[in-house]
Image 1: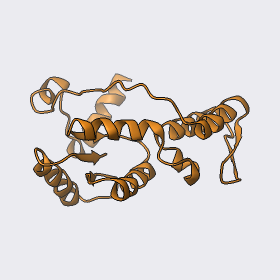
Image 2: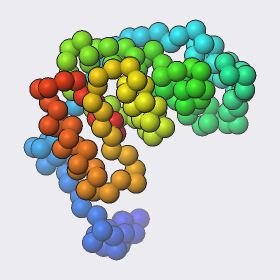
Image 3: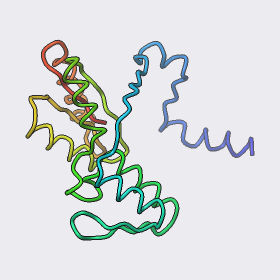
Length: 168
């Protein structure tokens, strides 16, 4: 196995740049996590419970969602927690997201929100465009390095003015 690993490193060495955690700590800001307990709204809770117990759930829009296996079930449950509208538009952005936004707004903060669900970023940005004066920026797959740099630079320029959020 050791020879296989060294061979792999040799073959891909020209395409990968490794940075140790020790070196990253010099220029990457300390991660901050915010513990903000919230409750799911009734409609989201109902779908969540049905999906957990039966692997199938009725949606407020009249459709159904099915989880064919355990992996799919856990992805769907995470989507319901992150942004219920991914599953069904009638479920909205979700109480957890609204609570985070209220916290950011009341503290006039600038935040970076990470999600594995790109669709959530689009839904959240539409919601914030309609409901608030937040400046939002996003770095998502498929963007060029220049587009990503432009989004991050614009986000950094907003610091000190009004609340802004960078979605990644």
